[in-house]
Length: 340
Image 1: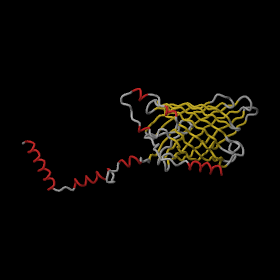
Image 2 (image 1 turned 90 degrees about the vertical axis):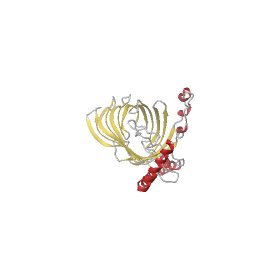
Image 3 (image 1 turned 180 degrees about the vertical axis):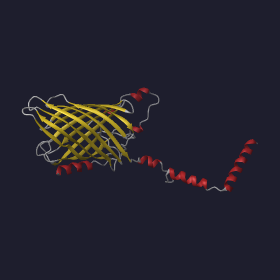
Image 4 (image 1 turned 30 degrees about the vertical axis):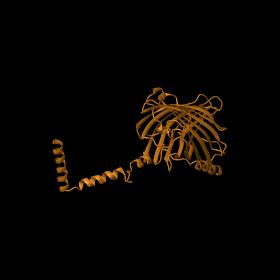
């Protein structure tokens, strides 16, 4: 528990930079991969990401078994206080049947959370912060399209959270229960041409018998404003389980707040072999307000543009018959002067 407190204190101590908007006009989901973006969803945005899946595992030859089942991945993300800060809860629940095939056939029906985590993510460095201030070179096509070395510098965020494991969980090592810390560093490169590269370095269930290290590398490419494809590799290393999973898939932007996606997961070994298919969706409730745009709407006298328009409307409506006649006479005099 002291380690959790120390990790959270370290996270809060880094919240000292000036806020910069990470809000996007369209939904920005972590799905269908399992890596986490370096950026938050934006303040006052609530985002739901969910995806049911089916999975099949098979181990041969020694201690052989088969697993057939289904599950659901889920996440709820919320931008709070600062544009850089995101609170989230995420997890995976699975239900399956494990059949031992090595000696006597036996079946074991299992269901539980594979993981359930609550945490916070904070962007500590954003190389794209002042990119909107760069103006194009009107005299050189080459200068506008040359490679920018700055694109090699990624956005960086840190994550600290706590796992909660239920006693006698069939998906964890024995004696794993209660809370345990999880930390992560997430980086993100946004290259030209619609390419995005995300890297996660994760230390999970720290201080337990199943303390594992993971890396996740994800490459995403936008084919057009609606369609995106991705490839991903996930390495897992611990005394309880080790694997290298590969994922391929894509997503479709149905509307600015709704995304559909699908992906396949597999590996290249047989201890065990893994194959899975998932379908998912992401939806956000957008209550975000851009502070800079709100300031721009203010007029010089401190009132909003909307209030100023309403005041002018009331002024026009308050004109009496005399005012209308005077306006008409003024127009007639101007016409006579122009004629002369």
